[in-house]
Length: 501
Image (cartoon, rainbow, N blue to C red; front, side, top):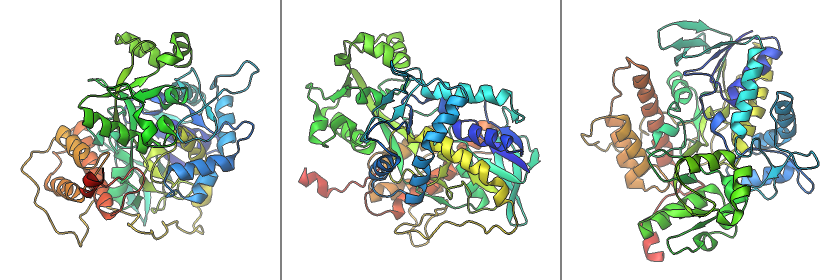
């Protein structure tokens, strides 16, 4: 069958390569250039390297707990059961994971993991190693890869997805389309995501009528270098022993959670933001106890970048701040990547598999891309059968899992301000009202403003990206308003908390 894969990160490349190996005719389309997405920037590693005393069951429990109990048990089981095979396949593809002196994969520890089970490559260059290996494999495959091929919409007919439309108006037909365009980090004023991560796959799926879910859950990484050019300081640094200190030098996270710096990311990020506001100065990441030689050997990418910026982190603490990092929600899928639209699959950060729940467990994202990218490819032929029933999301408990970009019918309209639309204004609005902490009134005001805005005429790639960001922002705000209680990364602030503090 003819298959189009949109996106070239670990999920898209895995899906394309696996589909090619299974005999499908595969076309891979990427908006920019191959390798310019989030995968190559991933520092920490890929979870699932189980050692003595560890197991997929323990990994599943950690994943469910980090997700605040909101994760889908079936999807989590598929993730952890597929972990060792996925890592083996990456090794076979040429990824040189770091090894111990006895030749075993070196296992790192990251926040909310009960055991060291993170495989890493090049110290803190795991994503780059994976991306390079898969792209090398792509060169020897039969996949037809096209760069600078910005997909703007899905083609539908006969009740199913039948292809894609590109920015130049060209149309490409297919039996199956797999969306793997990443998340929507550029919704926020402060983000770790590359500039091209603008929610494209989620937006075009929404426009085609696909169900989405859990868009209200946005993960903010707690340790991003303060400055004009954000640079992520991997959670693995804290796993290795670095600590967070306030302006007085105190480890304030000891008061927040029993696991302190290794608490779930939403807990750490909110604590960092709160202490920063209280002292009107950034908190700092103190890695000095680890020593210069260890930092350079274990975290060569971070070490080199900090030193390039004139920072000796082996001697001086580094000022950090939270930034938008990962979207737990997305296009709703089953465990094989099938969406509510026949002919359409979604994998990686574009998809809401249910693995991450309300808060992603560290280093599960690369694993999700590898496991579910392969599962999607393997399900293509089965799903093409006319006898195969169409998958549909199960009814949600609580807020609706399927949220579109329209205002809920029972929500009174609030007038938006006359603030003119710009990407910068959108990002600041989202940061202020749909970020780390939220209030009902703030979200209502934000949604009113989002509906008051119209995207500019889509005559350029940037304008298409702006339209996609606005589409996803409206859906995210609607989903957030529908969830009336705090859960994981969706944290509702109440004025009553001031008196209790």
